Length: 305
Image 1 (cartoon, rainbow, N blue to C red):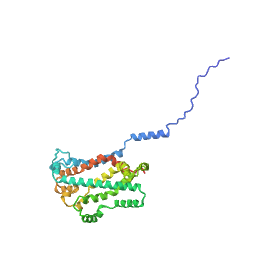
Image 2 (cartoon, rainbow, N blue to C red):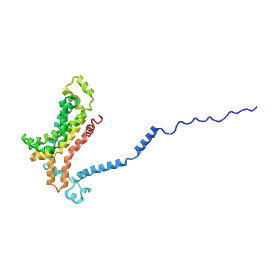
Image 3 (spheres, rainbow, N blue to C red):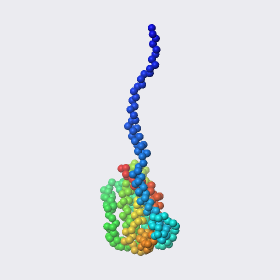
């Protein structure tokens, strides 16, 4: 009788059910690889855009501190061998401060008029269901298609009949009028993002139209107000047609006409002209840097609807 020994062989392992990475894992892997891969086309485009923006700014900043003789001998884009502030001193001791103050008054007045008129108009367009209001909004939209050059002759006749010719009001009123259509459109898109529940809640609390406008609409439309404020300021600050046609007195001359005079008077002194241009750009640059966050928010208002 023979003894049987126990078998030392192990049972075969069950077949593996894994056949490689799953589809979501493969997608994540491809996505991580694409994230690590540099975007050459995007980098080249950003570099080209940086050069387009940086070269004019470099030209303005550097040339304004150079002497006229050094500019003519070295070239416009050469690195300066010496810097001088004589150009800025010459500009500030001329009529430039008067032009600057007139331009500032025109810009502030235009922005104030547009904000005061555009906010109630946009609020009425968003909240009212009247056919008259919708018809008025359609008429306002027609203002976007009318260029200032097409109505400059009747506008000149109106200004002269109102005895406003050769005054700052002759510049302020038309500039604000042409800035209103776009401002109302931007604010209307911004106010449509306000939930209806907020209007209902403040109405239940007993608020009327005026209180709703100042307590709810005004705080929630800061981004839209910043957007139309910057656009109106740009249009008023850089306006040339209305000051050229509707004014003649040097005492009410604004900055754009002043720069035109500088170009004619100091046409061969390019560093002096660039110093005046640089001083005229600084206020708008400061305003943009302070309000750029609200500007971007106002431009994207209503995009998700």
